[in-house]
Image 1 (cartoon, helix red, strand yellow):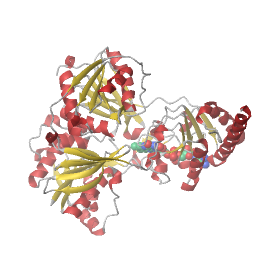
Image 2 (image 1 turned 180 degrees about the vertical axis):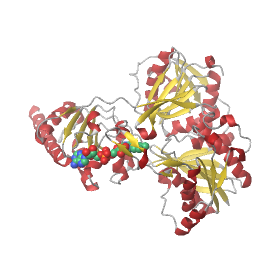
Image 3 (image 1 turned 120 degrees about the vertical axis):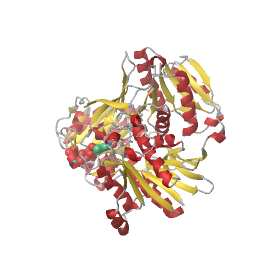
Image 4 (image 1 turned 135 degrees about the horizontal axis):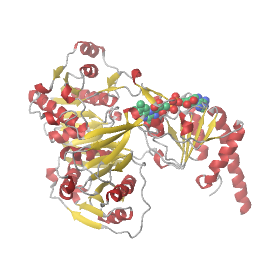
Length: 344
Length: 275
Ligand SMILES: Cc1cc2nc3c(=O)[nH]c(=O)nc-3n(C[C@H](O)[C@H](O)[C@H](O)COP(=O)(O)OP(=O)(O)OC[C@H]3O[C@@H](n4cnc5c(N)ncnc54)[C@H](O)[C@@H]3O)c2cc1C
């Protein structure tokens, strides 16, 4: 394998309901940094049906090249069809690096592609860097239960591949009108060649909790003592108009469903304000919320590691502090209301 | 009659592992080896399908000799046969080398009794990748179906099955030809307490144990550390965050300060009574 044949940084662009998934835009941001360091192109590879118009968005977010497979057979994501397109493109244009969002689709696709190429694949990366000289990808991820980070390399194979967690990398500010090169490709793949069929897509109507989209998250930990105690978190969230988050221990205890769990094995969140109440601040929790705008910790143990990861902290009993906070907040809001009325 | 193979792994119980909050290190002594929790659901699903359609369930694992214990756990859940592949030459395998070794064992198992369906757990709680299942499917050239949270139907005569694959905002119904490979979500089923006769059976059960030499057509270069494209180059502790400002005073004063800090972001809060 001659490594000189392998150039450029690629991002697999995930499309959802006619738009590019946020994680793919984040990866274009990260990929731009890697490509600049290597002095190579950043390309996005987009596979789907009627998706060609998304190329402009890719360019605005940093891509130089858009590889596009726009064919009816790619209407729904299927491992076998998408994999064929990706293998085709990779074998033809030989990227040095391919990044995928660590979503169910990204992981599914990357695992299959890595096996066929074959090459190494690092899962759930949270930090990316590249060696300027050699192009070696330094993909780092939490390991051994998450208390430490491990940097994973793939020295003998190209392309190097990694799935990257959502909300960890930053998308660039889009530059309207930024242009790039569109390379349209296609593969001859017949429906009969594919062994799976998507019969139906069912959107769940019950409103799913998406705490990763909230501006304010009030998260509670084991320090709340019981399911009843945890109600305090709901109360605060409700009065602030925020979503409820939780540590894993709380989820394990059955006080709330897993969809609320923040951290390594839960969701990664980046709200404008994050409250960590009765949460000790284990590294597995921190990795899921450390990029929040403003982190406020309330914990009765002054030594709790959460105080190292917050912007402001209150050492105190949640059951004493939080009710005062709710009360004062409501008073402040009523004052606001009065002053608003006064302005009219 | 279906022959279903569940691929499983023995892992340290990261749930029980207690983190030392002061040093942020893992206290490994506190962690017993258990059957990977996701795999328990894989085995349970295999057993339920066996009960529904008839057939048998085999479980396969690669690991050190004590992994027999994880196989016994699967027998308790209701599996019929267990296979352990164990050899120093497997050691240090990443996901690519792991899927290679397991595929060689699956080849041998299906020679004795053809396999209709392979079920894996979503991921292992220690490796945390979810990459091995799809890897096996590709090597066997059968369709991989990940994120499965329901099996709708298996029709062996017509050679297909239907499943639900979980999506971010719902699910999709997918039909696949048989044989195929599923990796299943925890939500696919609940693993009940094992019936007593199964526990007795498990206690006596001796799994098939194979070394590399028992497998056929094995390219040694693709095994273990040698066969692994990825290597861990360094392990490091993330830099400690700088730490925040602790608010002083009595609780009331602390909250007052806190409030003025959060109200700087006034736009986030909707004033009550406003339209
Ligand atoms: C592989 C792996 C993955 C993990 N993934 C995650 C994950 O995704 N998310 C996650 O959160 N954890 C995760 N963990 C678990 C993590 O290591 C911690 O065990 C967990 O975060 C601790 O939860 P906690 O802070 O709620 O509980 P504890 O650590 O028990 O902390 C409770 C805190 O509450 C404080 N407290 C007690 N009473 C009060 C009171 N009245 N008022 C105020 N404070 C009080 C205590 O001082 C203490 O600091 C993972 C662990 C492993 C090994």
